[in-house]
Every structure is written in structure tokens, then in C-alpha cells.
Length: 483
Image 1 (tube, one colour):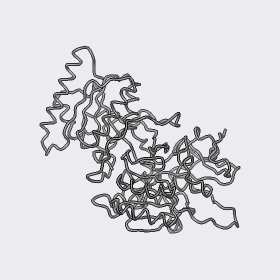
Image 2 (cartoon, one colour):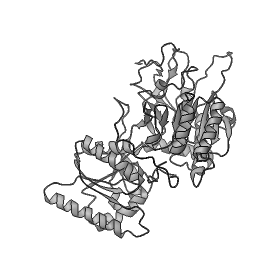
Image 3 (spheres, one colour):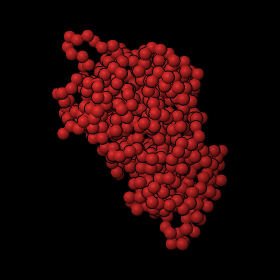
């Protein structure tokens, strides 16, 4: 049964195929003007200023899909947006009838620090490659990708944005850094051009500036909600005294309060130890003494919140043991930064819970990317792939209505490499996250991500002061650096 969603009454209806997940199959409906191809997984890479169209990509064969897609009913753009998400990664149908004049390509800009400092250029090159692979995967002959180097600076971003706006870009993907996003958003806003950026600094989001990145506040809310369902009510926390810690601490306390729990003790520790962990050990021992005191009054501690990634595990794992904090009895919960390959090597973190996208989507994407380019993609590159496929899907819409707010912020969202997500009116991307459990080798899903969105977006703590990276994080585990 197909539900209806009105995007703009005077406009002819255009199609969006729907699926319940990345591996669900699709079947196109036979009524309406055009069938929208659906896509989503990020990637980008390559340096310099370039204009890439699908025609140049079509010269080499696309990697074979792992699984054939069986037909399912398609949802149209005038269907109810609360019921069916749009699947990204499905090849697009022709936009014109046989014999009809070809439509001019829709110009989509991609701004990345292709000559940025440190690892930024390497990551940006992979994100460029991911975007190009995305357009090739969906047969996006209707899209012309305008790739520009923003040099990783606000000045470079201003020049790049001014250039692509002058060339007729209807949507801007990127930039990566918050300061650059602010500059680009101002230029784009003056021409009513929406932006889908990759910064994870919530402060630069806005009604026409969407952040497609992973946001720690949502991961915290999801894992705390799950812990509460498992009767975890009394929490303690070890928070890093850095930008990341300042970002997640208010989100954690708010999430616990919303779930009906209580934070009975929270301590911060220095991240830059100079190779000596004695000061951190003292803090962890103080936390142990606090646990003993609280539980001595008949109030057991249910969970300990430890945000951070592999560096956090390497620092705190041995110290938790030395301080006799029993993480087999007190449940460890964390953020998606724990989503790193070797996290289970430390017994103190075995069995820890964290929220993250279902890993199967990224694995399939990573395998395809590796076959195409000869190296594994950085974790963040999936954002570029999904952004490019989303752009290709919406680019099949009518002129003037392709990237309007109601199309971008479809309530039922989109299904991409990292699962179900939706752009919101405030610029924050809401994601459907799974609950993962750390095991000896990697992590396993113990609670599936929701299949659909219901109601309004998740309420999160107000953004902290704007944060900038000291160095670019190539993996999600590099969470102490906010871009």
C-alpha cells in the first residue's frame, strides 16, 4: 500500500523508490512522471579543481553489486513521508522519454580540502573518489559534479564556493571544516542554495546548512536509552578533559535525566599525560573510592560512561584494573568512537555497549571502494558517498523543486551506507543507530537500529563552543578532534 506525500501541489509528481534497509529490494511504480533512483554512501578523493561528469566515469565498469535487489512497491514524492525511507544506491531511470530532447545536467558542487594540511588531503581525495563512485553506481548521467579544492581554509572555501555558485551549482556538498562551512553557508544562502556539509560541529548547522556527519550526542542518547531499558539507573562517568569531553558530558547528563536515571559521580581526567599515567591513575582510584562509598550506603552502581576511542581504551583499560573497578559487574557504555577494530583486546572493555550505524553497510561499501581504488576508504568517506547519491536522487526532480526543504527533510528519511537517516530543519542529521557490544574480535549488533523514524527528531543538549581539529581524524575513533 502506497501512502502519499505532497512536496509542492502545483508541481508534477516525481518518484522516490523506497526500501526498508540497504539490502531491501525495489520495484518501481507505473504511475507518475519519473522514477527516482535512490542512493547513499559517501566518498571523495582527488586533488585540484576539476569538473567531473558521469560520462567520464562510465568508461570503466562499476564494481558488481553483492546482492541482487528484488522489487518492492515504490513511494512517490507526493507519498506520505512518514512511512517509507528513500533507498540510496539504486540506479536511476532515464529522465526523458525516448526521442525527447536531453535535459541539461544538474550541477552539484563538492568542496574538499584536497591540498589541506596533514592527513586532510589524503582523506579528501578518498571522499572525492567516493562521490564519483556513487554517481557511477547510480548511473547519474543527469548530474555534473563540480569538484573544487577549498584548501582547508575559510579563504579557500570562499573562493571555491563563489566559483561553483557562479557556474550554476544547485547544491553544495562539503566543506569539511566548521570555519569553512560558515563561510560557504553565507555565500550559498544569498543564492538560496542548500549545503550538505561534513563538519561535526553542531554550531555551524542551520535551516539550509545540513551536517551529514556522525554526532556524539545522538550516540550518547541511544546507548543511554538502551541501558535504561536494561534497568541501568545509576551511572558514574570518566570524562576526558578535552574538546570531545566537553562536547559529550552535557549530552550524557541530559540523556540520563531523560531516561529517568541519575549520575551519582563524574570525574574528568587529563588526556595529555606526557607518557605518564600516574595522575590519571589517581583520579581513577578516587572514582573507585567513590563507588565503594556510594555502594556502602546500599546504592549499587549500574553503569560507567567512558567516551572515547582506541586511545581511551589503551590509557584507561589498565588503570581500571589497577584501581579494582570491576567492569564485568558495572556495565561500560560509550560512544561510537569505540567502533574500532582492536577494541576488544582489553578485557576491561569486553562487553561494553555503544551506539553506531549497523557495520554491514560500511563493510559492503568498503569492499567495493577497495576493489575500485586499491586501498581501504577512511571511515568518514561514506558521508561523501551518501551525500552524492542523495544529490543524484533529488536531482531527478522538477526544475526549481529538486532541493527544496521539503525534499531534503523528508520525514521518513533516506537509507544509505550508514543506514537510515534524515536531514532536519535545524541542519542536524538524525540517524537510526544500532547498539553494539564489544567482543574479543570487533563488535556485534545486540539491538538493531529502528527500521523507521517516528515522531520528531531527538532532543539534544545545546551546542558547545565552536571546536576545530588539531589534526584531521582519519577514523571515527579520532574523536578528540572535532572538525
